[in-house]
Image 1 (cartoon, rainbow, N blue to C red):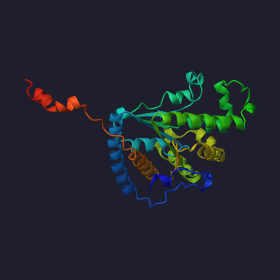
Image 2: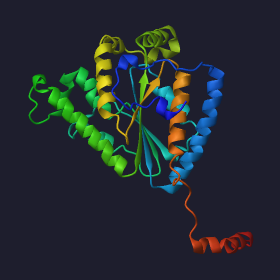
Image 3: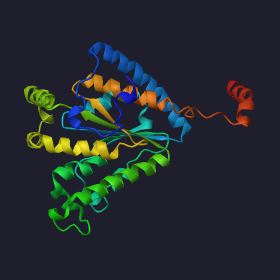
Image 4: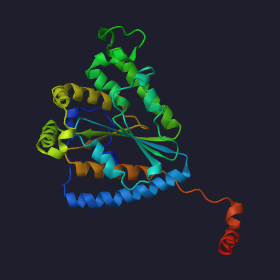
Amino acid sequence: MTPKDYKITSQINIKDLATKPSFNVDKEALKKELKKTRKQLGELQDKLYAHGKYSVLICIQGMDTAGKDSLIREVFKDFNVRGVVVHSFKVPTELELKHDYLWRHYIALPAKGKFGVFNRTHYENVLVTRVHPEYIMGEHIPGIHSVSDINDDFWEQRFKQINNFEKHIADNGTIIFKFFLNLSKDEQKNRLLRRLDKKEKNWKFSAGDLKERKLWDNYQDCYQDILNKTSKEKAPWYNIPADSKDAARVIIANILLETLSQYKDIKEPELDAKTKANIDVYKAQLDNEK
């Protein structure tokens, strides 16, 4: 598997995108592969942190039950906690609604040397709000007086704003990955049933999940537009077959490792000449301490 196998590089029909991996799913083999890859990612993270010139933004989108939370837990398990920050974006707060819709995402961006993971992302602003345009009214946007004012031009402008936002941060040192966890409707049904069948999983279930499931086709149409309009060279989308959680984790971990390994300038900084020349002196000072 290579990143190009999953990268969106041309116009797609979402119905043609795979929800199941193209390789045999051996769970034990995949767990071993993930363990090896995430260890390498952890080592690379240390270099990125010491290097301090790039940040990495990982955007994860997918329908309910696509496996976002468990994927984050498993893929980033070997990261130093000081080097990765996860943000889960929920319904905007009162404060967030007093700013433009990208504000809360901008202030959550990772600092140089760090990884940032967005669990649900700024794309909710052309996804959930597009399926439920009435939510836009809470943003108090000039010129938007009713839902009827939210037309195709409005959404095209948002796509343009998001592309500009991502280009800006990419040009300033943020390496962007966008993963669409592509779950089939049948597999979502199975996972919702498991949440109901297993007592320890009941807390994850919400009746709202079933209401949103009825809007499946609307969401798929919106995702298709997102993938077609915002997969750019410096901010590409990857279609991740998500019917197998184990496979999805391995695919994403490998895409991250292979892509980041191409940045040959990411390495630990060398000591300055004066410090390097006096290493033996510093060792002697420490050895001679009483």
